[in-house]
Image (cartoon, rainbow, N blue to C red; front, top):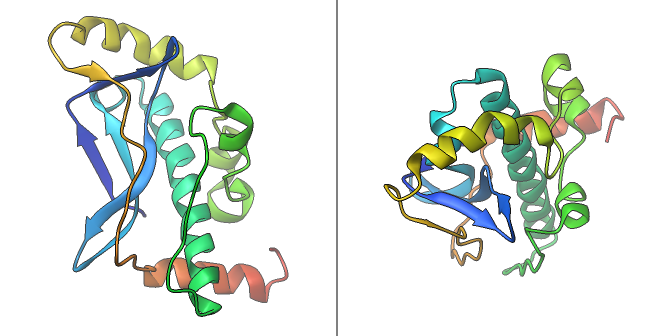
Length: 166
């Protein structure tokens, strides 16, 4: 499972709440893709919606880890990633197949960009924290010099490829 970081912030962009994002996070002596969640998502009492947000972000983590692994296997020394995290179509294109990476329940309930159910669950928490917790847009840009590929990711990717499922 990718690491998770909670930040004491409220995130929004263009009248949309942001429930989390995938980003490199420190892990051991390197960085790996993990999920960063703002306070309202972390404090939401609807566990099913929090789980859906985490699975969504984990899917991004797995997708990007796969991109990095492929680049490293081809001898790449660097990787540039330029995409608009606030565009639904671009966001939806940056996921792994949830049926290959997650359990059936999580795959069947997979959250897409701007999902209304999570908004209903998180918005009251967001509103209760306004004026108390700093608000703004998350910082989605990153630059790291070392990005690790976790062993469990490599094992799962190998199993998917060996079974002809990719």
